[in-house]
Amino acid sequence: MAAALDVCLRGAGIVGRTLALLLAGQRLRVGLVDAPPSPSHSDVRAYALNAASRQLLQGLRAWPDEAHATPVLGMEVHGDDGGEVRFAAGPAPALAWIVDVPALEQRLGEALRYQPLVTPLAQPEPAALTVICEGRDSATRAAFGIEHDVQPYGQVAVAARLACEKPHGHVARQWFAGGEVLALLPMGGAAPPSGGNEVALVWSVRQDRREPLLQCDPADFEAQVQAASHQALGKLTLTSVRAAWPLQVATARRWCGPGWVLAGDAAHSVHPLAGQGLNLGLADARVLAQVLQDRDYWRGLGDLKLLRRYERARRADVLAMGATTDGLQQLFAQDHTAWVALRNWGMRAFDRSGPLKDWVVRQAAGRL
Image (tube, rainbow, N blue to C red; front, top):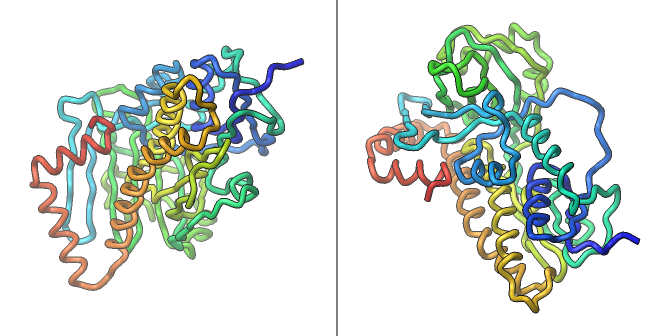
């Protein structure tokens, strides 16, 4: 008869797999519930991971090889009336790393295959602690009756991969215009020094633009991206399928209860303009694992007082990031002349702010 589980993880995405490896490293018996496989499709997602996330995944031997983890050595953020902010990595190796999602998932899967204390499950099983990390549309969260405050943006993120005429130089570029945000993220690994000629597109656009951008001719799509990016990388050529998903800011009203806890997008989601969504989820995994490891010997894994330590430790950071990204999105959605002048003036002032700008870089990069 199989040994009883210590922890049942409902959700085998990146956060769930990472947490499973962390808990198994504490000699806990973990069940990992995965959803049935979906039909095969190309995954064009790419995440910006900070130094803290990189260190966590390297410690689990799950960091992708350099061909699938591109260092970001600089960042350019462009407003809609001359405002501009530029960031440089400085003494740090990189501001962030743009990681190919399928490559990261593959490395996590390989690490799990060599971890005998993690058992793949088709259905949830009883355990001292249930961790719900199924994503923002979590069925278990709904079944548990956990209220989830959601504010839709009326926008979708359109994602694709593009070949660019000019090398990207390991610079992430972002443009705000008309309430929309276009990001071109460097891909292709660490070499050559001038950067490769592949970028990941994440374009936050109005809901009514979803189908026109997904269904238009590739040449038309390329021309629209080139225009929105002011030809910064020259001619762009679509090299992948296009995908889209709705955008929202959301948080669960309760993150834990006796014997259960939320993590990752099941607990919170933010606008992708700052590239912090997965970093927040991986920080959840790291903090929850540390709280469980540091518990008093007599306290059970599902003890509510213990789980509230995790919630208190994470909620403030998540709410702060959600407020920041929401505020920026709302600020650039305003089209009145006074707002346009104010936000672009603010960008120029921030770019010259010195210590404040350095502090923001350290926060975003996970180097506190």
